[in-house]
Image: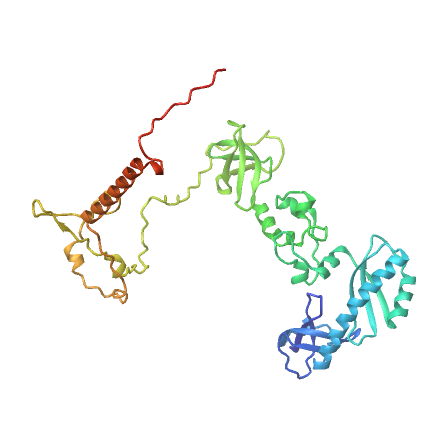
Length: 412
């Protein structure tokens, strides 16, 4: 076992192992490490840990030191220098008339080398461009041509799923993807739907390919001759995720039916002739599933679930007050909303002591009697009638006895 730390360089999603040389490095710490290209500034992704010797690529490069304040300033100065170099390089490319697109500029930690990444359709003669850039920056200039996938990885962005691109997040290397994967997963072969930001097939097509391949081994192919509980027919569609097939029966070819994989018997897998195929007399059994309970059905409580405790302050409503009738001395029930009578609570429930801690804080709203509300309505109606009578008698306010005339239609 070898003790290592994992670091990640700027713009890369791959981790590299380095020998800590006795230093205790924590995640998210910046370190200065020794690489094949020289001293570099990197971020620790995983602290001190042990890995098998087979996982380490020899020779294992050491960690020079933990990043100091001067190292942070040098890294910030290099980032500023990269922005200036990007603009100058674009001007030089336009001056030389080269058909290339500048993607990114990286400056080494020591500042003695600048790398320019670009994309182009074919080979580009940039020898004169390198001479001009070397005379401006007084450093070693290196131009690297990359592909469209590497361009998307460097620039980053959001995919059609709304999440950051996989290549810029966690994919350490590009995985091969083919159009056969889209066909196996029954996806649309429209390039706009199965292509990523880079214009190539999406890397996520590879994620579920193993599950689809395993399901395709158990499911029949299209145009297979199968036996179903309703008769024989040919498979016209296959749903690998739900493991269902759509069969066009010989008895009803215009209305295909769906069956589970356990409900069919494959007599011939794939296209072919039916000659010589013996059809069994016994048909496959139909698979029954438990139907979900209807929303109107009462719900049953599981025996292991504790009973629901309802606060007595909410469960026990105050009993409505009754008013005494003047004619017979009897009591009548107060009416609630909608004119429906309210019934008093049972005596045994009303006498139950309230042990809820919120019982004292619940404010009981008094119930108004029917006579009070009817008297208020009658008084409001009388006031409205008096105001209407005053308006009719006062000529100044548009009242008085006025004769109303009906407008005659004009002669055509």
